[in-house]
Image 1 (tube, rainbow, N blue to C red):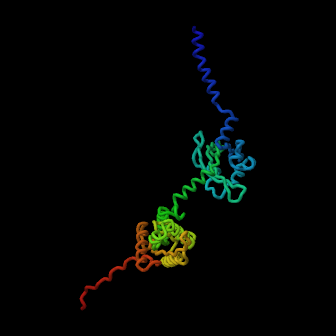
Image 2: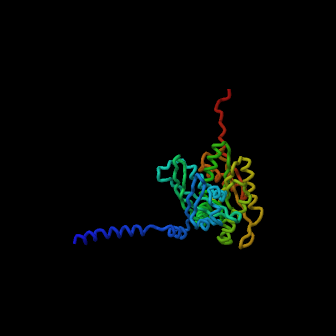
Amino acid sequence: MVAQTRSSRLMPIQSEDKAERGLTLSPERIASVLFASGEAAYSWNCAGDTVEWSANAPAVLNVVSTGQISTGKAFAALLSPDSTQNRHDAIMGDQRKDPGTGIAYEIRYALKQSAPGQVVWIEDVGRWFAGADGKPARADGVVRNITERHRREQELARLSQSDPLTGGLNRAVLTKAIEDEFESATKFKTSFGFIVAAIDNLAYCNQTHGFGVGDQVIAAIAERLRTHKRGKDLIGRFSDNKFGIVLHECSLEDLFVAGNRFVNAVREAPFETSAGPIAMSVTAGGVVAPRYARNTGEIIAHANIALEKAKEAGKGSFVDFQPPRAAPQLDNKKAG
């Protein structure tokens, strides 16, 4: 009876031991899992600059063979100029101290492909381990091809910054650009300009031809404005019928020239629409900052004040903001 009791107590323990050993993945099974998940594993000997890879690495990285990536130097040669990160700098430039369990890293970079301009985006996650001298001696990690994910992220970022109708920048991005330009101009003692251009008679166009044609007109005007901007200037849709234009490093004289260039460009030729050619114009006002505005709110407000002055002057006009002139001081002294 005692023997049976001892046996019944020992058997579950032996069974559990076998179960634990059975749950350990074999190297072959690990390779299968990596392949199924679209990941490849590597181990980089930092001192000797040799890299060992799992067999599926060429397929994941879209290279011919592991011979192309057998050293850190060879792998770095495949990096695209689009990359702002790389494994060598992430590891060898890491100033953290390895406590004995390694230092984690996670980076993203692009690898050049055989076709010009094509790249594969890679997510690289791993952990480096220090040698006796405290410097990185080995790095173990996995890489994953995230080209499609990167494309989706870029598209979402673009959509979050753009106006759906015109494809140009939206008000939020333009406002941030004004803030950045103001900070830069204040720091480096320069100036920049901001113009608000309003489409004339858009309501009449919508009533006559329909809102679909009106949208075509808005998109066409946006495109024409973009073709007349300088390289670092930004143009976007500021409201339903208004465009905002941020002019990089712009003097008062530059603002006047640019403002008239934009309004003249819009009225120089009709716009082709589904209802036929339609002639349109814009009226615009602008301001130079920080000369005539002390913050983003004032910049936008003063540009709109100038726009109202331009409307008073006539459709298709441009007016630059000028501060109100101080009333002349009256001399109350009596003539002696």
